[in-house]
Picture (tube, one colour):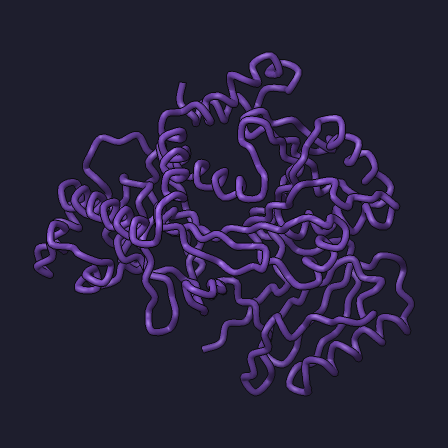
Length: 438
């Protein structure tokens, strides 16, 4: 029985029916030979010195390049055109003889890039800078390899994939149910769409009953849980060993509340739907790229150019990613997303970073969450979800402080809302940007 079928059964059956089979369902992931092999390989890699890790990475790179040459018509032709041979590769720098692969080129040459090898695969899609989804053929074995990387990273914070349990907050609505048990990932999934001040204690009861010792989910949902628990007088200091955040940006105001309420390490990793890069953040939020997942270079603009190892069905060699990176391997990297559009535009072309919007006073003391909506340069609406009813004077005070902070090139109008706007996948962004600069 493959992982896709197991996931369907796991999602559709009531927990009471599938509970006797929980261990069997879980074992389909953690006892899969590809998962076990990848996890053990990562443990061995931890014991190597810098040079040993470089040699390991180079061997994996050659292996992927040979495979691409033998099984992908696109790469066979491209290697020949640029007189490139995997056998003569001595360093990652040798790849630079090849041109980068853009998302547009990937879609144009989709069938030719795909491996002609008879691998079990499925299709995934990801957003691009143009908003048009980008399709990828994903080898099913990549699912198991991916989870090995995730669990190995989490293990640095005390997570044991054989014993630990997650309390998970994602952008998923279960209707009227507050929680469901998911044995495949050994987690209790909490419904963030129904959580409020009056029922957050019920969420905590479900977590305690299940015995979750780690929190996991979108920053906005975990932040909201922490905020509501603090209001309800539920003390969470040291209750969880760590919190694992994914998918969304983590804003300063969210981190401040999460760390204050949980008093636990915050961990995030960087990846993308194409599964060609994996970077791990330390407790200070500085990233290091994992050499077992692939190789990385940077363009003159700081954009990652990556070659992945875990998906052979559609090899991505020197693939250009729509993000940019600053920092160094010695000090760690910061990773920023072009596609997030996390800037507001002033009337004269000013670009105001989301970092400038953080306040370290009582401006938002009675605000649960906020979000900017921009349709035209020089103007934006700031939607506010209040903790409690805000008077007209309080709203005007917030509007005045925000406008003072952002400068004369941008006029912000405050509006009260019940909830923030979320993406189709239930993700939160501080700025919903409808205006595109030329």
